[in-house]
Each structure stands twice: as structure tokens, then as C-alpha cells.
Image 1 (cartoon, helix red, strand yellow):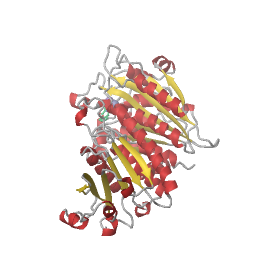
Image 2 (cartoon, rainbow, N blue to C red; image 1 turned 30 degrees about the vertical axis):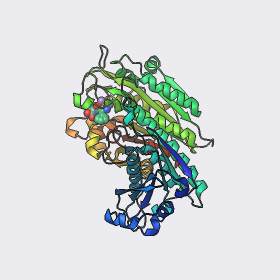
Image 3 (tube, protein in one colour; image 1 turned 60 degrees about the horizontal axis):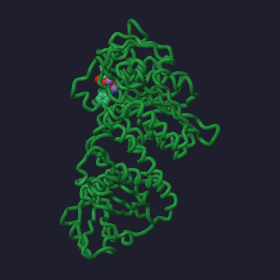
Image 4 (cartoon, rainbow, N blue to C red; image 1 turned 180 degrees about the horizontal axis):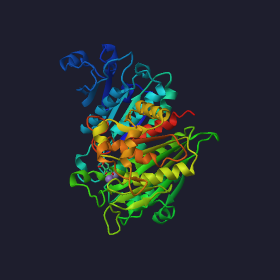
Length: 504
Ligand code: BES
Ligand code: MN
Ligand code: ZN
């Protein structure tokens, strides 16, 4: 099931698609749906009244009309009302999500609509077109690679966005950027959705290398032997329970300006998390193929950025392995020494994400001169309860970088919520036998925060740091029309936005 996107200066009448969407706000007037009468003569006013359609957020009604022996479907989609003088962009995203999923469910082949004016949303046309392009394609994504009954599958849907504004040149650039963003989000979703025995550490590394070549990124990959030699006992330790060789992937994007700043992206890449010897109960293990979402996010974000060319250098690193059980598996009680020389007592082998991230964070902050580092990880189950599915959790001791990340989250729609990060929580990871322990003391229950304090120990050279726990948002987010079930690609939109809007 595919979705094809096009941008056109033609009117809806000229486009003559099988279906047409009319986007209406709560204060709509007949002039707002006048385009319908250029296509076919039908009494829209009576229909909308009969259906009690008021343009409310989340509402949509379908009007099929027979015209020259063919059916044209008109979708009337609600955009809600203005608040503080502007329409809500998230309402628009979800309206497009509902539109696309409905059109696909109805097996339609073509759809067109006129892009609303960006200024109603208080936004620039380029950005608005970028959001339009990206969300249509994100909404069109469905993981069906292994469904054999293709007969029932919806046809490929061709969506044409009609736009006749005077700033169309800017808007079309934004629309194209939206396509690049959506490709990255959907590729990340494909990786996360891929069954865990197919998506092995070497497979991710190979795909990263291929993408790097295609898009002109510098790519360095360490195998298990090299990881061990470098003293990355965290990544090596977790990999010991599996016969799959681990990988440490480094991708680099260089901005054109020689004096550009540099941001580090760090991703957790556990291709399957069984919990190790501290094994997970069956229910909690069911979705643990999602545990490489951080690695997928940083790799796919930098691939998009290679195409979008922001004025900031990016270094993306991903620590990739499986957390399984084997004769040489890590044991509770083991002590590991990480890349920066610090040690930790492994009390629970299921707290493996922080072990692989410890090496990745210390490697990137020691070997690169970074102006900021952001790590992305499906790190704690506690995060799901702390912030719920509509946010990723943000933890940081740097208010300035936190504000930049929050702003990128707001703009892109890939939202974060900050949890407290005071030093009171740090005592939770004290150990009697090592520099720290890999689980928080029970008396300081906040698992998402204590995990972040563990990571904090590995941020070298006082690099401004933000940790994003995406365990809440990476998979099966309900109620958001453009996500559907499975992987969401959360944090990809945010990272791309952050880099594109980076100002030193
Ligand atoms: N990968 C899990 C966290 C997770 C849970 C991600 C649910 C997505 C959905 C992580 O490795 C883990 O197992 N964390 C433990 C930590 C605990 C042992 C301190 C957890 O949250 O239970
Ligand atoms: Mn785990
Ligand atoms: Zn995990």
C-alpha cells in the first residue's frame, strides 16, 4: 500500500480526481466550498445541514455524487476554530490523517484538496506546506510487508495538493522537504516494525552504510571485536548473550560553513530486548522489537538531514545489539567498565539500554567537540506511566538546550514533556561495589529519572545534554489518526526540526 504525493497549481476542477476534500473551519460560509460547484452541481448546504457538519475538529462527512456515470466522493473535513486568532496545526495534521486513512479504507485511487492558507495557522507557507507533505505521507504508511492477502489491500493512493498562492515557489520547497522528512519517519517505522529476527544488528549497520553512501554521509562501523578492544564493556557486555555480533555505527554530516556548530545524536539500538537473565514476563516482551527505535531514529534523521542540508554539523552514533540469554550472557552481579573508565554494577540485566548508551555517550562526547548531545532511547517502562503515549520524556540539566528541544517538539508535532531532574534522584544509583549500579534504589521510585542520572555520568567535557525517553511514544500510540498501529517514528520529526532551526 503506497501513497504518491504531488503538488499542483491546477484547480480541483482541472485535477478531476476520484475524490476531493474540502477543508472547513467552524466559521465556514458557502464561499468556502464553492469549488464543489465547479465540478458538479449538488446541494452542499442542505447536505452539510442534514449531516450536522459544523467544521469541528476531528469531524468528517462523505458526500458521494454521481457525475457522468462516475462517482466522485467529496470529503468535508473539520479544521476546528481559531484560538488566540489562529487555527491549530495539530488539528490540521489529524484532519489530514483521518482523510488519508479513510480514502485508503475506501480503496480510492486519487484524491485532491486545496492547501489552506498558512497564515490562518499563524505559520509561513513553506513550513505549512512541509507539514502538509510530511503528514500526508506519514498517514499513508501501513506496515503490511508480511500480509499475503493483498487482494483486500487498498490501491495505491495518489494525492494531489492544489495550491495557487503567490508564494508557491516557497511552498513547493517546503512540500519537498516534507517528503524527505516523511521518508525518514516511515523508514524508521519500517525498521521498528520489522520482526526482530530479521532486523539484526548487522542488518541495521548494513542499511546505515548503504544510506550513508547514497546521501554522502561519512560512515564508520565498529564490529564486536573492535567494540571490545575500545573498552566498551557496556555494549559488549549486553551482546554476550547473543550470537549476533554487535555494531557501533557512526554517521557524520558536515555543513557547508567551516565554522558551523556540531550536534551529537545518540541512539539505543536493542534489536530485541528479552531482558537477559533478568528475563521479562511474556506480556512485557511481546513488543520488544521496538527497542532499537532510538538507533533507527538517529540514523534516519541524519539521512534526511544530509538531503536537507542544515547549517550545523551532525554526528549520529548508534549502539546496536540484542539483549538475549546465552551461556556467556551478562549476569546480575557482574561489574562493567565503560569507555570513559567508569564502572557499574549490573543488578538487573533488563536495564541494558543505559549500559549500551553509557559507551555511546562517552565515545561521542570524548572524541568529538560537540555543542550539544541528544540521546534517544526506549529506555524505561516507567516513562509510559510518567508522560503517557502523546509525549516523549525529556530529561536534562541544561535549560537552554531543553528549551530548543521543546520548541522543536512543539513545531514538528513530535512532543516532549520535561520531568524533574534534581540531584536528589542521583543517590538512587549509588553502589557499594562500583561507581554506580544500573537500577535505581526502590525508595526513589522514579525509574525514568534515575535512568537519566545513570546516563548523565557518561556525558563528557561538560557537553550540553538532553535525554529523550521514547518508550512512551515509539509504538502503538492511540487516537492520533496519522499514526495507526505499530511504530510511530517518534523523535525523527523532532531531531530534523531541531537541526534545521539550529542557531548558534
Ligand atoms: N526496553 C525496556 C524499556 C521499555 C519498556 C521500552 C516498555 C518500551 C516499552 C528497557 O530496557 C527496560 O527493560 N527497562 C526496565 C528497567 C528496569 C529493569 C530498571 C524497565 O523499565 O522495566
Ligand atoms: Mn530492558
Ligand atoms: Zn531495552
